[in-house]
Image (cartoon, rainbow, N blue to C red; front, top):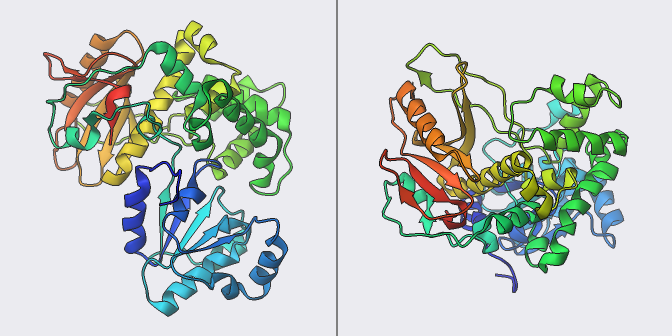
Length: 421
């Protein structure tokens, strides 16, 4: 392992996925650590954006892409989407060599392909396995002691003795700093700058590079601020467009949001769709979310001090932080984060759903409201069921501070500073 490398939860999971397929594609937002993590898996390296080799790399990509695949296996192909022909070249090499663990591709954007080009491009099914890289969770950055294991909770363990060392002030700082690996290793007084640089980069250039369409950076900046004001809500695109009606049309807003998804800035939370015992209808809209909570804070020009003075904004951004961490902790369990909301107004901030059918319901509470949150979770348990009738593995209220405990009604209280994989 490279000296100075901070281990990631995904390390062994990515290795197992690579060993079960011909190639592995690691996708995620810029600066989240894809290249560094992928480098731990590989023995030879191709960096498409290397200034010294860029011209040569793109020449061979257009003339003889197989030349770029030469090297000891597994071979890293970084930012492959800048030369989409490499996808089919890798797929063909996997077919020809009939091996596993041959290539690792990384990408911070979905390649922009025309309809005809997209139809010609092979899906990669059976050859290339896709995984998502997240920014660093609190456990990975050393800000959670991980004394409460999420996998253990799914196995029925509740005998944890844990107390979080986080304060609200520290939680506000961590939400603003985010999980960017470079920020994690930087002094606190400098680390907050990275999220703001990220938002500036997205607005000024990345949103245009996503698909080669020039976009107005001021509109992009206003859109990020509007999305930040609506983070972890079910705000429709029409509501976002209304917020921006003085600078953009609804069509423009939709196109800009699509571009943000292409570069993994927006990472919305899909709706959970269980069977219902009651006649309530389920809301099927996704909840607005960013790939890292610091994007919302930076888009609002909010620092830790201002978050502490704005409880609603802090609560929403803290929920976004919890979503990010849960996504990282669930990945080795083959799980995903969803949300629940029905026509009666009953909701759960998160549903943790595993591929084997196990699930859990989570409410996030920054300071108060624990009793109401627990009551909501119990109501959801009583009115929903999965296809095979599986009850929830656990119900939990996740908090910013405090200690782990089991309430008299069986609902868990889990400080985010104690949670780990």
